[in-house]
Length: 428
Ligand code: GAL
Figure 1 (cartoon, rainbow, N blue to C red):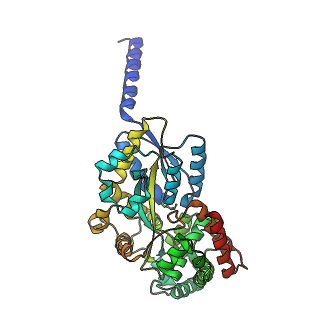
Figure 2 (cartoon, helix red, strand yellow):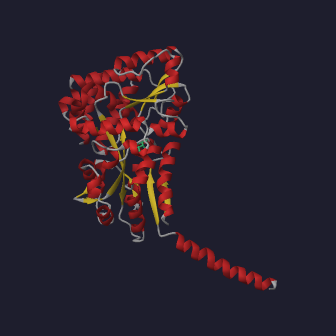
Figure 3 (cartoon, helix red, strand yellow):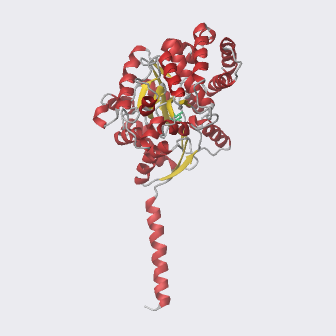
């Protein structure tokens, strides 16, 4: 073959091969907007990406940095207004109903998958109701996180002469004093509003109990928001805040988690996505770190359920990819591997009841056991700070008052409680 012929043959082969190969490779593309951007969270979401790509779909990653998701929500809103929402997005709790009522979510695309995969039987009604609109699934629930956890570095505790994890607020303060005296940061904490409110709601749960928490944070009862128990909770919050990392203003949660992992700080109050950072650092629960319920909240569980909603798309080719993601997400394999990486527990009833079978660690086993037990006693309550209890407008009112209160050296708890109630009322 002369050189011209060889080139022509190569061109014709090249034009056949890659094109036909790539056409066969992608069955369609779906963009997924989420805020899982810390190292550990990324490892978890990569599990889904790999499974969806293995099925032949193209995953367009729409990651928006910013713990708690406030920035992701702003991006989503502007994209929706511009008529360009992604195929799939991380949206949670009552907010799903608000989005669905705009008509932007797809009520058809998940129908067959939900039926075929028997979602109604796999999920607790409380969970399936959250992700349905007018009886149709508009989202797939991904996992369950618990908020009221305290993360401890036992090595640091030992160096500071503390021999056990605190179980009451007084023991917490005593441990924090010892940590400080030994030169450690007592409480790793990033001073972003959602992190401030994560601590606030754990303290409210400890002081007011699950019933009081429900009245104040879910029912938004004026008496509960301004009463003596809330004033006490705010007083305790101010004391907890005195132990927070002095360099933590505006800091991301995972950078603060790293301070506990690296032995600079003793404790962090954070939901169990914090575990994803410990796992990524090859640390083992019960050995290298301890997870205990936030002091005074061992009989209660503030829950946070991540879910992925489906938006209506102009390009009808996206439907197959949306369905594939939904099918994968509630599959046994994904439920196990994702939660092990993410620090959460599965949403499927059958898996929650048999956690040992899947190789979950001690923290996850405790979490699942408490989730099931607390559901029977009223101890299971939705997290305000993580969009499960209220609309985003009411949540914003809580965030503003709580963060201002923590940062104002002259703030008065009774006055802050009144402000809280007024701000919530205006946002309702
Ligand atoms: C929560 C979310 C978690 C985790 C966390 C930190 O609101 O449910 O999955 O991502 O924020 O960003």
